[in-house]
Length: 192
Image (tube, rainbow, N blue to C red; front, side, top):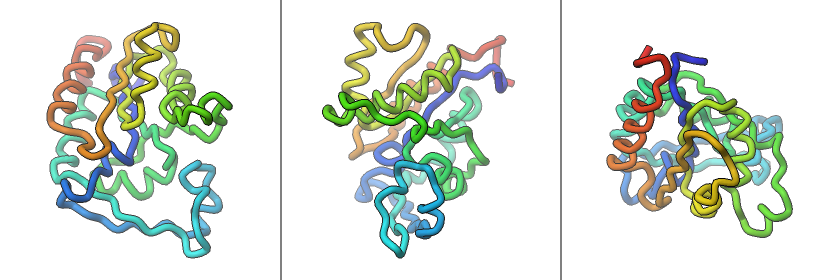
Protein backbone atom coordinates (compact mmCIF):
# COMPACT_ATOMS: atom_id res chain seq x y z
CA UNK A 1 0.00 0.00 0.00
CA UNK A 2 1.40 3.38 -1.00
CA UNK A 3 1.63 5.69 2.01
CA UNK A 4 -1.46 4.30 3.73
CA UNK A 5 -3.65 6.48 1.54
CA UNK A 6 -7.05 5.88 0.07
CA UNK A 7 -7.21 5.80 -3.72
CA UNK A 8 -8.64 8.61 -5.82
CA UNK A 9 -9.70 7.44 -9.29
CA UNK A 10 -9.89 10.43 -11.64
CA UNK A 11 -11.69 10.77 -14.92
CA UNK A 12 -10.43 13.56 -17.18
CA UNK A 13 -13.06 14.88 -19.60
CA UNK A 14 -15.88 16.60 -17.74
CA UNK A 15 -13.90 16.41 -14.47
CA UNK A 16 -10.49 18.02 -14.94
CA UNK A 17 -10.95 19.03 -18.59
CA UNK A 18 -14.07 21.14 -18.26
CA UNK A 19 -16.26 23.50 -20.22
CA UNK A 20 -13.98 25.97 -21.98
CA UNK A 21 -16.13 28.98 -21.04
CA UNK A 22 -15.32 28.53 -17.35
CA UNK A 23 -11.62 27.79 -17.46
CA UNK A 24 -8.90 30.23 -18.32
CA UNK A 25 -6.02 27.78 -18.90
CA UNK A 26 -6.40 26.29 -22.36
CA UNK A 27 -3.83 23.85 -23.70
CA UNK A 28 -3.90 22.42 -27.19
CA UNK A 29 -2.86 18.78 -27.23
CA UNK A 30 -1.96 16.78 -30.32
CA UNK A 31 -1.71 13.00 -30.15
CA UNK A 32 -0.14 11.50 -33.26
CA UNK A 33 -1.90 8.83 -35.29
CA UNK A 34 1.04 6.50 -34.61
CA UNK A 35 0.69 6.88 -30.85
CA UNK A 36 -3.07 6.46 -31.03
CA UNK A 37 -2.72 3.36 -33.17
CA UNK A 38 -0.31 1.74 -30.73
CA UNK A 39 -2.47 2.58 -27.70
CA UNK A 40 -4.95 0.12 -26.23
CA UNK A 41 -6.98 3.03 -24.85
CA UNK A 42 -10.66 3.15 -25.85
CA UNK A 43 -10.05 6.92 -26.24
CA UNK A 44 -7.74 6.23 -29.16
CA UNK A 45 -10.19 4.32 -31.34
CA UNK A 46 -11.71 7.35 -33.11
CA UNK A 47 -8.91 9.14 -34.88
CA UNK A 48 -7.91 10.29 -38.32
CA UNK A 49 -4.65 9.70 -40.16
CA UNK A 50 -3.49 13.05 -38.77
CA UNK A 51 -4.14 11.98 -35.17
CA UNK A 52 -6.19 14.02 -32.71
CA UNK A 53 -5.88 17.66 -31.75
CA UNK A 54 -8.09 19.00 -29.00
CA UNK A 55 -8.22 21.56 -26.23
CA UNK A 56 -7.66 20.70 -22.59
CA UNK A 57 -9.32 23.37 -20.45
CA UNK A 58 -8.13 23.55 -16.86
CA UNK A 59 -9.24 25.62 -13.93
CA UNK A 60 -6.11 27.59 -12.94
CA UNK A 61 -6.49 26.23 -9.38
CA UNK A 62 -6.27 22.61 -10.59
CA UNK A 63 -2.51 22.18 -10.03
CA UNK A 64 -2.81 23.30 -6.41
CA UNK A 65 -5.87 21.09 -5.94
CA UNK A 66 -4.07 18.02 -7.30
CA UNK A 67 -1.20 18.75 -4.91
CA UNK A 68 -3.63 18.91 -1.97
CA UNK A 69 -5.38 15.72 -3.03
CA UNK A 70 -2.08 13.88 -3.44
CA UNK A 71 -1.36 14.53 0.25
CA UNK A 72 -4.27 12.32 1.33
CA UNK A 73 -4.84 10.08 -1.72
CA UNK A 74 -2.90 7.94 -4.11
CA UNK A 75 -4.06 9.45 -7.41
CA UNK A 76 -4.94 7.05 -10.23
CA UNK A 77 -6.18 7.76 -13.76
CA UNK A 78 -9.60 6.16 -14.35
CA UNK A 79 -10.21 7.57 -17.80
CA UNK A 80 -10.48 6.14 -21.27
CA UNK A 81 -7.29 8.10 -21.93
CA UNK A 82 -5.56 5.30 -19.98
CA UNK A 83 -1.74 5.63 -20.28
CA UNK A 84 -2.07 8.63 -22.61
CA UNK A 85 -3.11 10.59 -19.49
CA UNK A 86 0.40 10.29 -18.06
CA UNK A 87 1.86 11.62 -21.31
CA UNK A 88 -0.51 14.52 -21.95
CA UNK A 89 -2.43 15.43 -18.78
CA UNK A 90 -0.04 14.75 -15.87
CA UNK A 91 2.53 17.34 -17.08
CA UNK A 92 -0.19 20.01 -17.36
CA UNK A 93 -1.10 19.39 -13.72
CA UNK A 94 2.45 19.15 -12.39
CA UNK A 95 1.97 15.46 -11.62
CA UNK A 96 4.40 12.62 -12.07
CA UNK A 97 3.36 9.32 -13.55
CA UNK A 98 0.19 8.01 -11.94
CA UNK A 99 -1.27 4.54 -11.79
CA UNK A 100 -3.70 3.76 -14.60
CA UNK A 101 -6.87 1.69 -14.61
CA UNK A 102 -6.80 -0.19 -17.90
CA UNK A 103 -10.46 -0.15 -18.88
CA UNK A 104 -9.59 -1.68 -22.25
CA UNK A 105 -9.05 -5.01 -20.47
CA UNK A 106 -12.70 -5.00 -19.33
CA UNK A 107 -14.93 -4.96 -22.44
CA UNK A 108 -18.33 -3.37 -21.78
CA UNK A 109 -21.25 -5.73 -21.30
CA UNK A 110 -24.24 -5.58 -23.68
CA UNK A 111 -26.29 -4.02 -20.84
CA UNK A 112 -23.66 -1.29 -20.28
CA UNK A 113 -23.62 -0.54 -24.01
CA UNK A 114 -27.44 -0.46 -24.26
CA UNK A 115 -27.73 1.90 -21.27
CA UNK A 116 -24.62 3.95 -22.18
CA UNK A 117 -23.44 3.14 -18.65
CA UNK A 118 -19.80 4.18 -18.99
CA UNK A 119 -19.32 4.60 -15.23
CA UNK A 120 -20.42 1.05 -14.39
CA UNK A 121 -18.04 -0.26 -17.05
CA UNK A 122 -15.23 1.78 -15.47
CA UNK A 123 -16.30 0.63 -11.99
CA UNK A 124 -15.81 -3.03 -12.94
CA UNK A 125 -12.12 -2.24 -13.57
CA UNK A 126 -11.73 0.08 -10.58
CA UNK A 127 -12.90 -2.33 -7.86
CA UNK A 128 -10.24 -4.99 -8.54
CA UNK A 129 -7.58 -2.27 -8.90
CA UNK A 130 -8.56 -0.95 -5.46
CA UNK A 131 -8.05 -4.38 -3.92
CA UNK A 132 -10.22 -3.59 -0.89
CA UNK A 133 -8.69 -0.19 -0.14
CA UNK A 134 -10.97 2.79 0.50
CA UNK A 135 -11.46 4.92 -2.61
CA UNK A 136 -13.29 7.72 -4.37
CA UNK A 137 -14.17 7.67 -8.05
CA UNK A 138 -14.68 11.08 -9.66
CA UNK A 139 -16.59 11.01 -12.95
CA UNK A 140 -19.11 13.15 -14.79
CA UNK A 141 -21.18 10.16 -15.96
CA UNK A 142 -21.68 8.26 -12.71
CA UNK A 143 -25.35 9.02 -11.98
CA UNK A 144 -26.56 5.49 -12.79
CA UNK A 145 -23.64 4.04 -10.87
CA UNK A 146 -24.51 6.04 -7.76
CA UNK A 147 -28.08 4.71 -7.94
CA UNK A 148 -26.83 1.13 -8.15
CA UNK A 149 -24.41 1.65 -5.26
CA UNK A 150 -27.22 2.87 -3.03
CA UNK A 151 -28.72 -0.60 -3.40
CA UNK A 152 -25.51 -2.03 -1.91
CA UNK A 153 -25.00 -4.53 -4.73
CA UNK A 154 -21.78 -3.34 -6.34
CA UNK A 155 -19.18 -2.94 -3.61
CA UNK A 156 -18.89 -3.66 0.09
CA UNK A 157 -16.45 -1.18 1.55
CA UNK A 158 -15.70 2.51 1.91
CA UNK A 159 -16.10 4.08 -1.49
CA UNK A 160 -17.65 7.21 -2.89
CA UNK A 161 -18.58 7.86 -6.50
CA UNK A 162 -18.49 11.64 -6.85
CA UNK A 163 -20.67 12.68 -9.77
CA UNK A 164 -19.72 16.01 -11.31
CA UNK A 165 -21.40 18.19 -13.87
CA UNK A 166 -19.33 18.15 -17.08
CA UNK A 167 -20.22 21.81 -17.44
CA UNK A 168 -18.55 22.71 -14.14
CA UNK A 169 -16.02 19.92 -13.60
CA UNK A 170 -14.26 19.66 -10.25
CA UNK A 171 -15.19 22.56 -7.93
CA UNK A 172 -13.92 23.85 -4.60
CA UNK A 173 -16.88 22.18 -2.87
CA UNK A 174 -15.99 18.84 -4.49
CA UNK A 175 -12.39 19.32 -3.40
CA UNK A 176 -13.49 19.82 0.22
CA UNK A 177 -15.60 16.61 0.13
CA UNK A 178 -12.69 14.64 -1.34
CA UNK A 179 -10.18 15.98 1.17
CA UNK A 180 -12.54 15.07 4.01
CA UNK A 181 -12.93 11.49 2.70
CA UNK A 182 -9.19 11.12 2.06
CA UNK A 183 -8.24 12.45 5.50
CA UNK A 184 -10.83 10.24 7.21
CA UNK A 185 -9.53 7.15 5.41
CA UNK A 186 -5.79 7.64 5.80
CA UNK A 187 -4.56 4.26 6.93
CA UNK A 188 -2.03 3.98 9.73
CA UNK A 189 -2.81 7.27 11.47
CA UNK A 190 -1.74 10.08 9.17
CA UNK A 191 -0.17 11.23 5.96
CA UNK A 192 3.16 9.70 5.08
